[in-house]
Image (cartoon, rainbow, N blue to C red; front, side):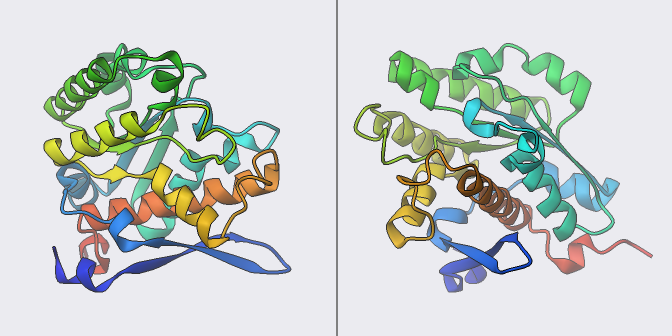
Length: 250
């Protein structure tokens, strides 16, 4: 493990700022950083001064209401990356659709690669497969082949597992799908944004009351903002985009 990661046990991420106060949400370093590299992201930022990101997702990638699109984590990820990468043209396109399984998301990979040319795909999945009882081995095979295909097409991948909710953890058997995603990420050497564990940590530490706030739009917006900033921190670290690497060449 790189010295920076070993030394950084907790990263503090600025969350939503208001006139009254500024809150912060922290993520333990062991949940956010890994040895997996995002080499296509590195090349795109350093050589072309641009970064195209596509988010595969389901309903938990979106928020309802008139401000839903701007407040959901894909939009917050774009804001965070733009702030962290001055002089780099950052685009984050969300392809979130309700009720998609991992297999559904793979159907348009070829078209997405051609049309959007992503340097990075954030693949958020797992909940719908668990709800529909998709065989875990089938779920795993779909992710394996999808990650391979995206790599072959020149895109890096970050896997993101399901969100945590104390209201549903005893109703939907998520653990086997989450464990499969952790194993797939390790075997394919891609970063895993362990949203399930991170949100569980936030709930346990009192950063967010996810039980009381499960239907609270303000809480949802704050959580999405924190997720966007945390994913941005993961991208910066995994692509080795320190200040010197991202400075515009003279």
